[in-house]
Structure formats: structure tokens, C-alpha cells
Length: 137
Image 1 (cartoon, rainbow, N blue to C red):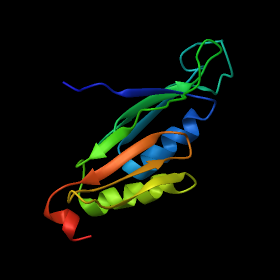
Image 2 (image 1 turned 135 degrees about the horizontal axis):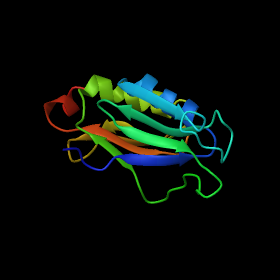
Image 3 (image 1 turned 90 degrees about the horizontal axis):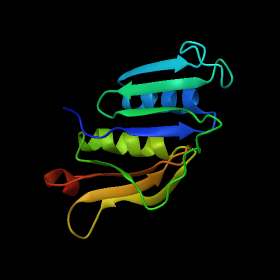
Image 4 (image 1 turned 180 degrees about the vertical axis):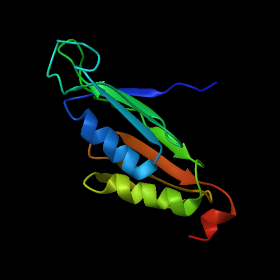
């Protein structure tokens, strides 16, 4: 059984955004258009549903007229300890490209390494790890 999966209503950028995340995290990406779902409530090539499954799972669509596009404050997606330190550093750098580094991924006073980045699509990520690896950065 899987826990909650983040589902994002993108402002017309679902194909680009989910492709961006697939390029960083890998996994299997499936995209379905309004046309494929026999929907007539928007651009036939807009994404009605997209899903990235792998180490990081995300889902989303292009926001319809009834949906509000993604906007969040006070929320982070945490990738603490989800991969080896070198992989987490790579993900952090890739998410930060054309985004905003809020707190560099570095060793903190409590001995763990973590950092925060907001990517080009507005998602706020907390990335880090604990243990001996933190001291070896």
C-alpha cells in the first residue's frame, strides 16, 4: 500500500513540469490528454492526467476552468533520506536550476545535512540525510 501522492493542478504546464521531474528522478511517466479521455472542456492536447511513478511519485494535470492552479505556502515535499547523499545532492542542484535555493544543502549544527529549494514550478523541497555520510560532504 502506498501513502498519499501529491497531485498538482498546473497552470497549463503539466506536460513540461512532469517531464522535468521525470528527467530528475527517473521512473515511469504516463501522460493522458483531454482528447484521450474524451473530454471537451479545454484544449484537446492539455494534460487531463499525468503520473510519475518511481522513487519519487507525483501526479498532476493542467488546471481546468473549475480548478485552481497550484499555489502553496507553508508546505514542503520532503526527500529526507530517500536516496544516497550523492543522488540527493544531484536532485537538489537540478531542482534549483532556474528555481530558488532557499537554504543550501549542507551540514547543519545538529550533524545532519539538509537544504531547501523551490523549483521553477513552485514546489518547495526539503532534501537531506543523516548519519556518517553528512560528515563526509
